[in-house]
Image (cartoon, rainbow, N blue to C red; front, side, top):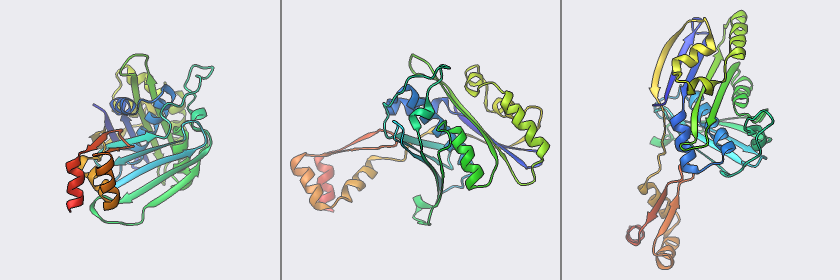
Length: 294
């Protein structure tokens, strides 16, 4: 089971967030049928969004989005306070040759563009507050560095971010996925910051240790080294979408009676597809007639 831990160190001046997301990335890849390089990019985006949204309150929602010039076109991920995440890419089958070092060319498939973070509160219960929207230019396209750049520039939180997805040639294709985010809060000791940077710099690749069986606390210890920490919160996380047949009916109803009547006459039904999870909803003749009768 995928898990996320929120921890603190150095008397609250260091915040550490870590998650294993192998099942989440596996489900996203299965649903969207993504190419290998897009799978790596999407998995990193989903993991980073979960980590960034780990402090959400009950009715909050956090969305990250990259609008880019590369072949992938863009990626959107959305996390909730309940530990769910969902996401999609504009071009699921985009692909580039692997780099000379054998790594997927995620930065190449992303290209240049803008990284957005949207924080919403209470939207799902009808509290339509203006969302917070922050944005920064894409600085590397490797996703982890872009999360770190956003935190430093838009939220003034110096951070180190490690995100990774390891793929294999046979189903379920995703061998390991996870991430760690270390945030330096006000009052963090400069010597301690240097020590953490050195520890992270010398750490093995995050997916290699997850594949070998490392849990979430192992990831925290890998990032902090000898520095002790306290776990504040621990929760299961999973890929989940809030779409439903009822919401599909509501979306069709919003098109207006004339459009619904045309669907009923010409197509004898309707088909709705959720972009976030690729689920298909089929509305029958009786569904459309019920909309008209209302």
